[in-house]
Image (cartoon, rainbow, N blue to C red; front, side):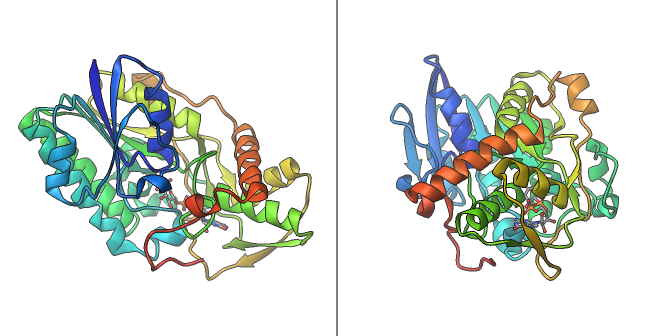
Length: 338
Ligand code: GDC
């Protein structure tokens, strides 16, 4: 039986991965997260669940004992509204990955997965609205997103050197704005797909005609649906390629175009109040998947419209039932904007 540890299992991607592993009776699953158990987005009786802070090395040592495979999703993160305003908090996540790598060596773990981000890419390559998809080599020379992106790039690098120096097998992926059901949609950490679904759902519910949009709406991104993300994660993990891969979509849209898709799903049209002083991040970003497709054979299945339909429906259910609002809409540190 393989013993698998998911760190950050109480969060969005970790929770979805846990929901896959829990169905496999050849896996003994261990889940860890800093949040109290009742706030985990998903938790399962069939796994051993720990609420602990992995910035503490003793906790990292304890939870990795006897573990074969480690997936590390644990970090303090969120959408642009969070990472632009909490750079030190984001950088402190370096302690989690450092502790887990050290503990993986002590406890002789077989393989280590690190969830990096498109925020590692050089900002000069993201200055236009429509940009060429980012290739893995575009992370260097280094000029990543301040705070959050530097932490991710440093931790990627540490994975590389732990495998070179200590023989630990590592796998690293760079996620490009993952979205979908059972994720944050309010409170300051939400990313654009969930935030804009929420705003349109509320406008429709309250018969309002105008929503706030950060920036001028012409900035572009590509967004990856959670099911594609989980499939890509497992494909990279199970492969024998010790490397760094994009896990993203190549469907580049402007924020205005995404709003139009959400309006069509909602069957409700809104006017946009552009807030130019809000966090905007890079001007344009998209993934180039040629390397991951060639080496791993992974590519996404869901279109943005298909993924947004599922996401919209789930957020609408949460808002209308009102039952899970606390769990999915609460930041756990004070300094959050909007
Ligand atoms: O927050 P985000 O999805 O993160 O924002 C995308 C764009 O959408 C930004 O330009 C933002 O200004 C715009 N936007 C417009 N209205 C709103 O109401 C809104 N809320 C939000 N959140 N944004 C709005 C993300 C990081 C992640 C992760 C990924 C990797 O950056 O925040 O932590 O690492 O990147 O790709 P984004 O795409 O800039």
